[in-house]
Image 1: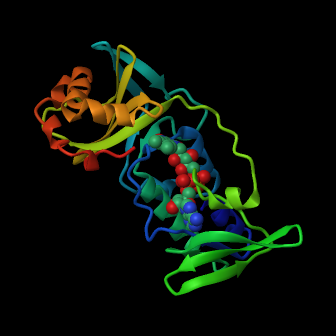
Image 2: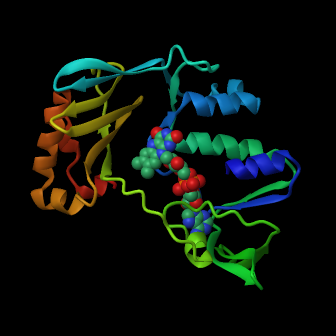
Length: 252
Ligand SMILES: Cc1cc2nc3c(=O)[nH]c(=O)nc-3n(C[C@H](O)[C@H](O)[C@H](O)COP(=O)(O)OP(=O)(O)OC[C@H]3O[C@@H](n4cnc5c(N)ncnc54)[C@H](O)[C@@H]3O)c2cc1C
């Protein structure tokens, strides 16, 4: 989306193909970093962007084995925004989509799933996509594969994936908020465990860090064991942890 925006801004004809019908994926963090906000400033989009609902934090605090400690201080950065902004990723992407759509040379096609590359000689000259109207070919001078972690463009182009060996997975879930909950808390660390709570006004987007590939073990141990681990990190969630009564409410 960002490459599409920048190309369209420079007057280059660009099509972005997105397989889903929206950008509402829930499982990602919501942090927009000061460096990203600085880029928005350089693009002349910052003021408008900051009109979208978001929260600003100049400092982040965590709870380490029950003790509150500062984990980040953005207040002295040499950037326009001396804070981190929290905003769901779909608001961020929808904002860019609307800005890009204002350029006549930009087109965003939702529900267009790339299923193959079109190769002529030794060049990629386009993509084949499943669309609501059937399969279609899209030809282009330049094809950018930005289709995420299971990228079909990488596989079809024969690129070798370099695994960086991230040792963790994150279980994401919604946990309701209540009056009187602690303000401005972000990370809960205890005996090597980590719980992240992102305040989305009506609820917390909670991320519980587990070892890579550990979801099957977590499922074998069962939901009550998971509840117990989360409550051990953030005891104020005890009165509502039972909301997580099915694994379908927990996304990897
Ligand atoms: C758990 C988690 C938390 C994160 N938290 C943060 C955070 O707080 N702040 C931050 O800045 N970054 C965060 N990141 C990183 C950030 O999400 C990624 O760096 C960023 O999303 C990568 O962008 P991308 O465009 O390369 O891929 P993606 O965001 O994965 O986008 C790929 C897009 O391509 C679409 N697509 C996939 N296959 C096809 C296909 N065949 N045809 C058409 N479309 C297709 C997908 O639907 C998707 O919309 C987080 C990542 C994870 C996994």
